[in-house]
Image (tube, rainbow, N blue to C red; front, side, top):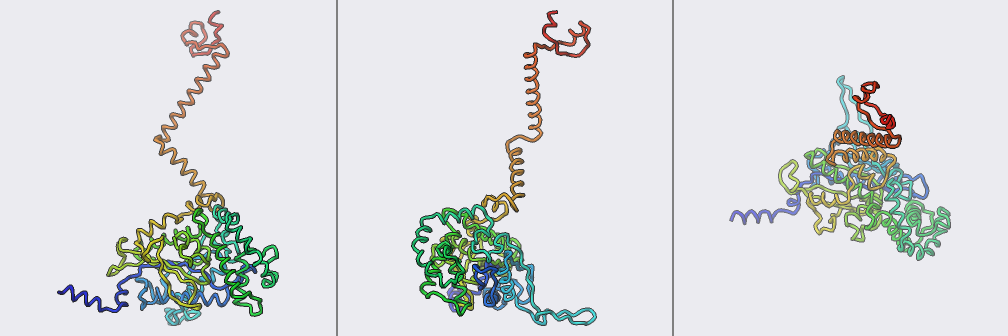
Length: 476
């Protein structure tokens, strides 16, 4: 009877109370930069609209993960003044992306006002500048430098094999078919583009650049001649097709190297959250749309047509570590799940809600941690050496890796073949002596020489050492 009363009591609880039983242990966010000027007109710059988009998105994540009153508050994370031991942020060397990151972080941990003031020993109060603006440093991401000044994003990956694989798309039958069938459409845009693209460049080969120029103009240039909404939609579909095929191909996984690297960073970061007992809580990386597309393909998300197009400015995807165990502290790995969420856009452009999606072809939106690890490891790149080998790079940062690999390989061969270095040295010396003995025998034969015992020489009065004597002397 007591069990029935307990079940009835649970059933009568509001859904919000049931949801609050879930604990968020940590999260990893990958964030696209905000609105910018056109790539076809470098140098590309983050616009005021883009800065505002990123700030608002950062503020949204403050309300989700940082605010103490949020149901999705990351357990134990500082809710007002940032604790730099709990959070890390990174971005490539790119002006648009790095400034986007700064705007996002400003929204994530906004100024704290007078709480940042400091009173010195002599009683003087030092007022914090910018109303207690909080500084969160950003680390560097190896690839992606100057990506927003480059319309060909794969080249910013610096991965040789990925570039070769992407270029293969331009020789595919699907590309050739679209290049031919859309020729008249792109030629018709010459007046709209106002000589920003040459006549010879008006083709599907430059699908992204052309759409990007017109899209930016449709947002910022009131006097620009913009094609109809139907044409702009067609150009967007073509640009999406062009960019997705450059970022991912199921038969050539290395093409999605950006997604492989991101997957490795997510895996390493979330594992650190678990292994540190929750000391590391939130990690954020800022980047470009190609990384989204690459990960979508690798994680099995592109089976949904909504994951085959470029995410819009300030889009977010996040991986959350969650558990339903009670209490505090890090539970066992068997009690931890991963939930993937994606939002295509910012709060300025529509709903602020993140939506959960199942990964790796699963039906559930939450996946056990151990299963997430196993599935991610199938394509994730987790070390520089692994990246160099996958990309076929041997120069730059990979030159030392190649040397180390060669040395390690040589050392391994010496030790794993069942022969120590000392034994190998003895055998080498014996082989050398054998060769010398063979050469001596050859000389004796060619020059008609022979070895004479020292006793024989003594009887002949020639000394006491063994000597090589002509055979003819014996006869004498």
